[in-house]
Length: 181
Image 1 (cartoon, rainbow, N blue to C red):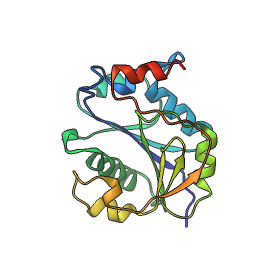
Image 2 (cartoon, rainbow, N blue to C red; image 1 turned 135 degrees about the horizontal axis):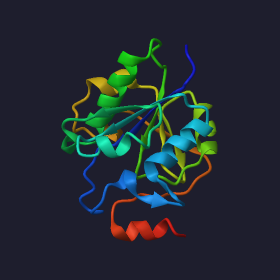
Image 3 (cartoon, helix red, strand yellow; image 1 turned 180 degrees about the vertical axis):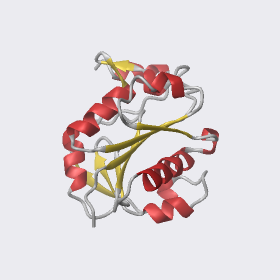
Image 4 (cartoon, rainbow, N blue to C red; image 1 turned 30 degrees about the horizontal axis):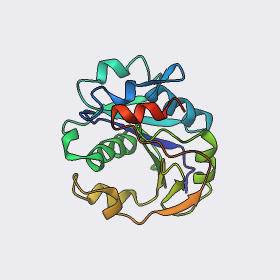
């Protein structure tokens, strides 16, 4: 079994409720996509795949460093479809298949590198409490076989573990105010 060194950042949604791309929201002088990448790198994650939509691809290129960017051609089908695009990229571009991956929705940004440390000690699908994300996913094959529009919670069982971080979900302009707290 290989170590867990892969992550998929989900940033393909159109952010209609927020009115601007969530991944490009600036918090403490960096975008949410940059923050996610920095935290993953700080936690020792080496293989990071960012899943986006075709409209944001050019915006992401200068922000992701040497990490991969892939486009979900149908992001309106939901996060599971985006996750499948990211997993497929990891499986096809890296020689060793991961035993688990980290799933990082860019708009669920209340976690820290130490959150990842706690997750990486787990042996089953796990999510941190109180932040709720990222998710450590072992059931990769189940996700790949599921319908693109099926919520992840309907595909796999996810354990909750206590880990540093706070719950943040950036969906509306009001949610942006929580970033200043």
